[in-house]
Image (tube, rainbow, N blue to C red; front, side, top):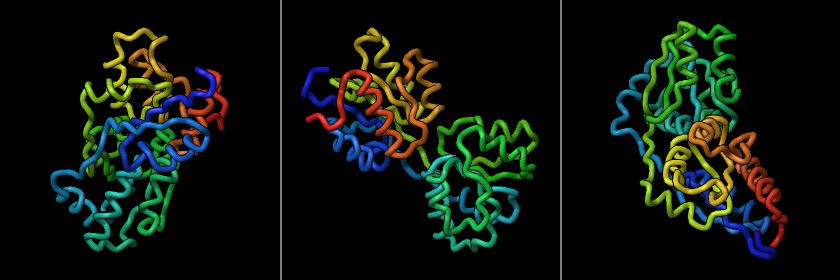
Length: 255
């Protein structure tokens, strides 16, 4: 890394999430040049009927579980639109505090906010009953619903948002000139690995993974992350990115 030249960090998350905002501001304050290159975005489902019908019968569910802030926000939006009585809400289980936050006004019983697979184990240990309502994206991981089903619970999965992935040409442009790339999801991890398949490891940028599932997807494709952020907060991601850059000789505050 050339002395006095700020490294380029590319943020591949959605423009309204980890593709900019506070994360970019934290990195820029440390003297890093930031480029937002979203490789995925999100859209609502084609129809809300299935989710609205499930929410209208919340009292029939033993638990509601959400694994992303986007899913939680969609549920909160539909609860408000359908004027659902919060007292009908079953215990809510969420992956992390950021995921739980959109449902705070509707969730008098927030049962747990553990991370990842640990949430499913906690639900099984707590003897959560059946059925469980699981609003999710169309590219959701199977870990949580799979574990609950293996423990004999019925899980009603309802898509509440759709993920749209960029094409390979866009992904290739995102890598150009990057010193480090923040990889926002397993699908983005697989896309980037595909377009970099012919590039020797020494010619590839460093990687910071947003969460363990994304890190696992990178390992699967032979391009492991240099660092996995402990949480998905902008502060944790900025810290992880700066640590990787520091290992390459970058001093925070350099201009």
